Image (cartoon, rainbow, N blue to C red; front, side):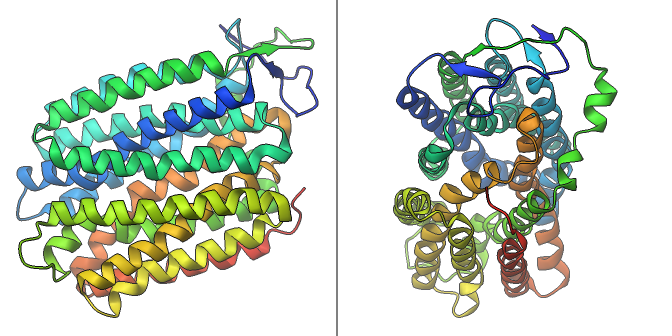
Length: 421
C-alpha cells in the first residue's frame, strides 16, 4: 500500500475507481457494518460505560461520565479527517478504502477488549478514548465509499440503508448490553462482530483503480494541514455546522437516558431503569425505521433534501424538550416516538445532502471525514457539557431546555445551505 498525491483519473461518478461487485451487495454490507458498529457504540454509551463509571465512582458518576466521554472527543475529532485524507491517497490492489476499513476493525476489537478490563475512571477514560479513535476509522470511511461508488441518484437509498443500521445497531447493542452482565464479555462479543462486518465490507467495497496515478508522495504534514480546507466552501460549512449543533442538543439529553430514567422520570412500579431504557430504545427504533424508510426514497424522488433535513431536525428538537411537560413514563415514550421518526428521517437524508455539496470530488474522503466529526464529536462532548448543566444550572429540566435550544438552532442553520447540486 502506498500513499500518493491522489490526483488521478475519475469515473463518471466522481470516484477514482470502479466498483467490483453489485450495488445491492455493497449496500447490504454497509447495513451490517453500521449495525455492528453502532451496536458497540450504543451498548457502551447507553448501558456498559455508565454502569462501569457508576461502579468506579458512585457519588460523582455524572461528572466522571462527562469527563470520560468529553476527553474522548479528541480522538473522535482528530481521527476521521486524518484517516479520510490518507485513504484518499492510498493506492494498492485493494483500492483506497478497504485497507482502512479492515485496519479499523482489528483496532476496534483490541480497544473494546481493553475497555472491558478497566475498572477505574482513569482506565475507562483511556479505554473509551481508544475505542472512539478506532471505531471511527471504518464508520468515517463508509461515508466516503458512498461518495465513491454509489451513483448520485441512488444516494438517498444508500443513506436509507446505511441509516437503518444505526437504530437497529443501537437497539441490539442496548438490549444486549443490558442482558450481558459481564462488561468484558459484552465488549469482546461486540468487537468480534464488528471485525467480521469490517472484513465483509472491505471485500465488497474493494475498488478497481483506473486512470493515471501519480507516484509522488505527499508529506503527512501537508495532508493533515489541509484537513479542514473543505470548510472554506460555504454550503459545506453550513451543512457541517447544522449537523454538529443539532446533534449536540440531541446527545446532551440522550447521553443521560439511563440516569434520567433512574433519577427523574416516574417509572411504573416494578419497572427497572435498565429495562425501561431497553423498552424506550425499542419504541424509538421502530419509529426511527419508519422515518428512515419513508424519508430517503421520498427525498430522492422530490429532490428536496434540505426541506427533509429541516423538518426532521425540528421533530428531534421537540422530542428533546418534551420531558419538560411532565416527567412521566408516558411522556418519555411519546418523545421516543417523535424523536425516532425525526431522527430516522434525518439520518436517511442528511448524509445524501452532504454528498451533494462536497467542495471537490478528489478530496471526498477528507471532507466526509471532517463531516463525520459533526456526528461523533457531539456524542462525546455533550455528556461533559450536559453534566455541568445538570450540576450547576438547575438539574435535568435545565438540560432539556439547553438541549432543545441547541437542536432548534442546528435545525434552522440548514436554511443557510443554498446550492444543492
